[in-house]
Image (cartoon, rainbow, N blue to C red; front, top):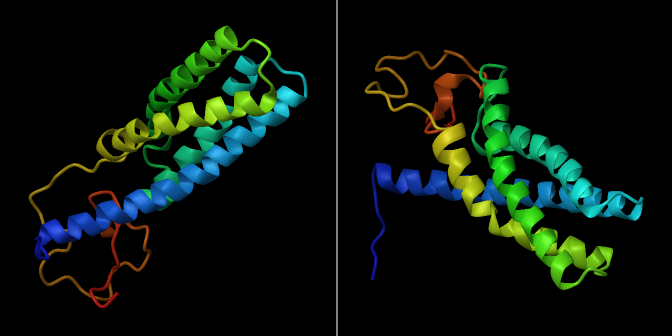
Length: 181
C-alpha cells in the first residue's frame, strides 16, 4: 500500500508525468507525419530505404521543435542549433532501427507491400521511442542544477510575465509565474 508523497518528489512526479504525456502526444503526431510521408514517397516510386530516410529527417525536425517548446518548455533561439544537432544523434538511433527493420523485412519477404513496410517502420519507431525520451530529458533539454531557488526571496510578483522566460523553467518544465496558477 502506498501513501501520497508530499514535497519535491511529488512535484517531480507530476512534472515527469506531464512530460511523458506531452512527449507521447508529440510522438503520435511525429509518427503520423513520418509514416504518412514514408507511404506517400514509396507509393510515388521512391525506394523504401530512401523514403524512410527523407520522411524520418523531416519528422525528426518537427519532433525536436515541438518537444523543445511544448514538452520541455524551451523557447527562443538560444542553443536552438545545438539542440537540433543533438537530436541528430537520436535520429541516428531511430534511423538505424527502422533501416534494420526494413532490411530484415526485405530479406524475409522481398515482395512485402507498402502497408506491411509501413507497419514494420512503425514498430521499429515505437521501439526506439523510450531511448528518445530519455535522451531528450537527460541530455538535450536537461537544465543544470543550481544551488539557487527558482524564484529569489522577495521577488516582485510584478516581474517578468512571459511564460517562456527562463526564470519560469524548472527542471526543463515551464512553471507558472505566480503561485496561484
